[in-house]
Length: 139
Image (cartoon, rainbow, N blue to C red; front, top):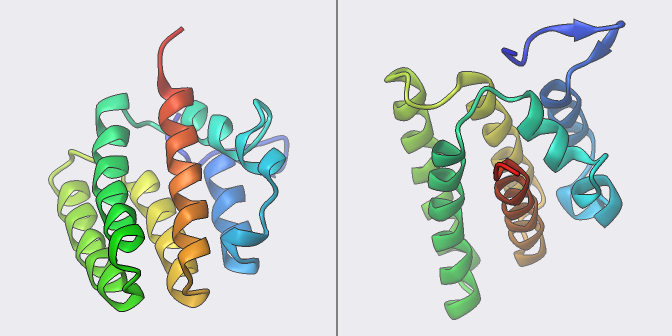
């Protein structure tokens, strides 16, 4: 699936999460909405045309940012590193290494963090990416 179809008039999981990220802070999403088997993490992974390797790469880059924030509590430094991640993901998408629909979702997530700049926003986004990695594992 390419992340652009509509099924029964409803947005696919990528579009639904992007829309919700435009309308509310990532910190306002409940654990159930994000982590439940019927939640965003699993639905996005199931719908996105992204490999587990690609997803882990994005997660590892984001994890390094969060680890730095946890260590030095420097939100501005974390934001600077996040801005660099935008560029890296754009480069990977243009090379065809990263699915463009997934890149767009990550940009919406990062935009949400920027808009609601806080350590909690970084932590919640980290949790979402971690759940996506977990759901991407083959059973």
